Amino acid sequence: MSAAIFLADGFEDSEGLITIDMFRRARVQIDTISMNADLTVHTSHNITLMADRTYKDTDLDAYDILILPGGKRGTKNLEACASLKDALIKHFKEGRWTCAICAAPSIFGHLGILQGKKYTCFPEFDGDYGGLYQNELAVKDGNVITARGMGATVEFARMILAEIIDPDMMRKLEYGMQYEHTFRTLKKPE
Image 1 (cartoon, helix red, strand yellow):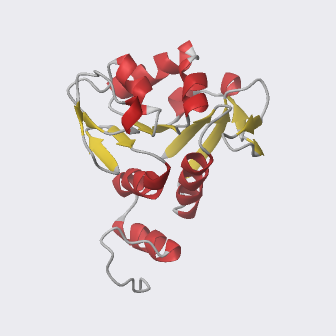
Image 2: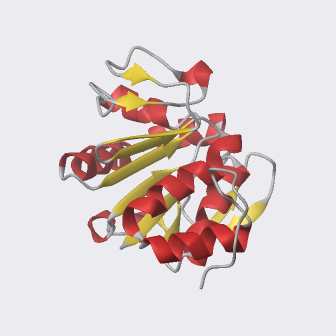
């Protein structure tokens, strides 16, 4: 399995970086894709980073999972890319994992991807998308996974990974992060 996470100027730092961190801890390939002409991307809190590749040099059909981090400005910049929107629709229709957090699920809503789906997003970005908004940290409905915001990032990435990695790797990931969504005492995996 391989994933692409799209980093546009203004993306929410934690929503992008925590997701990337968790995928790499789980040994799942995740490429960071700059939506700019070069590899440099500026986060919503003015951190400058270098992506793995640029959008213009990326074959999106090569990925099993497409991920959009939020952030108000980052989401606006992602939605300005017509070819990315086309790729998201194609990916979704092919039954492949299509994931977004915070403001970014609004892009899915505008594209009709949330029609008839349970979903969540940052409350101010909920609209008349033809689906059923859930007041949950993260929601999976079919091949679509959405999450509410920065505080839901760990659960968002965990929910995606739970679909693609084996339970032993998930337990190791959760132990290594000292995270357990059921809040039970963590024991080191065998």
